[in-house]
Amino acid sequence: MSSPARATILLPDAAATEALARRIAPLLSPGDTLLLAGEIGAGKSTFARALIKNRLQDIGRDEDVPSPTFTLVQTYEVEDAEIWHCDLYRLTN
Image 1 (cartoon, one colour):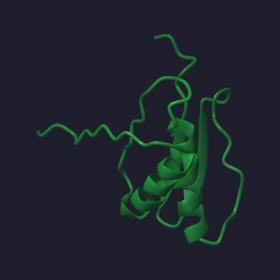
Image 2 (cartoon, one colour):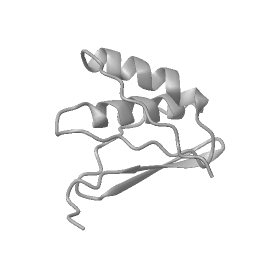
Image 3 (cartoon, helix red, strand yellow):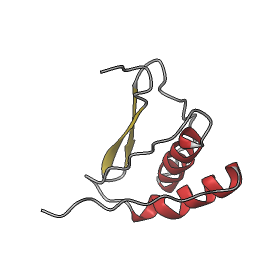
């Protein structure tokens, strides 16, 4: 079994982060998993929100995409899948 693809991409600002998320969103298929890692303020939530909003807009939905910091998981139904947005920052083990 091969290892999953990994990439490190440095983005200069929130606009660049959102643009990358919008480009990646249509490439994802059911079962794909993205892990965003980094320090607080690195842009993980900015990326996730932009990606999810793009997928929702594809099916005509414009809704708020809050950070799941306290709920740990927010789910969103899109045309062919369910998106799980997880924030595991508060978990210690």
